[in-house]
Each structure stands twice: as structure tokens, then as C-alpha cells.
Image (cartoon, rainbow, N blue to C red; front, side, top):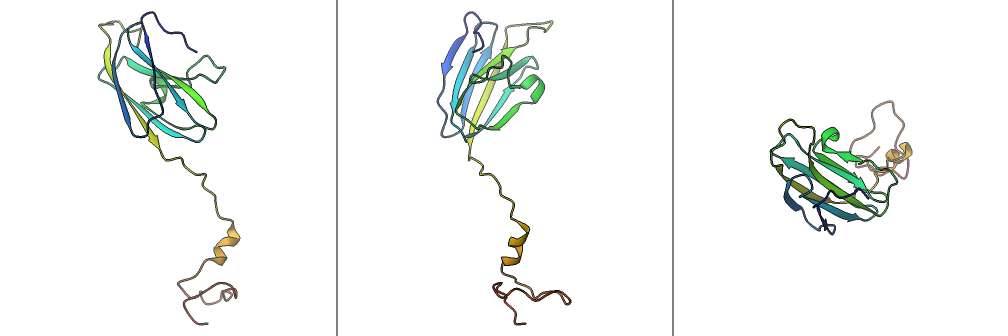
Length: 156
């Protein structure tokens, strides 16, 4: 688990049934960080917004052995849209860039967590299945007649 900066507060979330909005203020060691448990197959969209160009969000997968975030708004855009393949817990950390010349007091942010319907894997129909579908139009001249098991609205 990524280490908390001194003074950071950890808030444990539950996977929301509807869109949940988190708001806060980034400040070195004084902000909130979040954990979000996600079950296998759940689809979630997390969007970060801030008025400051120096505020960012990083998402770490706590079940992964990688020390780096799998998503960061500094490189990956403002929205993470993911369907997870195995049960996991994410660590969501909003932060204020330390390399800015003018640090100020931090910046306000909002994070939208949107549970989305789990997308069933789309199965492409085998080419042979197209011949079994009912036809609304007669076959083109010069093409073979429909198979006996293929219903047609027109008489041959």
C-alpha cells in the first residue's frame, strides 16, 4: 500500500450503488485519500476535476505487487473507465504537484465515482448464423434460394 503522507486521512469507501461525489482540498499531508473495494466484473468510471492545473489523482491497485499507480490524471487523462477482472481494492490519492513554482495552499477537487452496468462480453456471431435469420426480402436474382429452415415472408 502506498504510504500516507503525515497528516493524511484515510477514508474507506464502499462500492456505490449510484454515482458518488467526493470533494476535498489537496494540501501536502493534510488531504484525504480513499480506498474503494471492487468485485470481479464490476465496471466503474472515476472522473477527477479541479480548478487547479497542479492538482492530480493517482489510483493504485492494492492487490498488485507494482509500486506505481496504474492510473494517473497527469498522464492518462481525467477519467479512468475500468471493468475489473478480479476482486481488488483501489487506493485513490488526490495530490498537489510538488514541482510547481508557486505552491500556494493546495487546490479544491472533486471525484465522481460512477458504477456502470457490467458489460457482458460481446460475442461475434459466426458467419453461418446469418443464414439462419429470418429474411424480410426475397433473395437477389442469381443467388441460391433460402434454406428450407430459413423462414421468408415471400413465396419462392
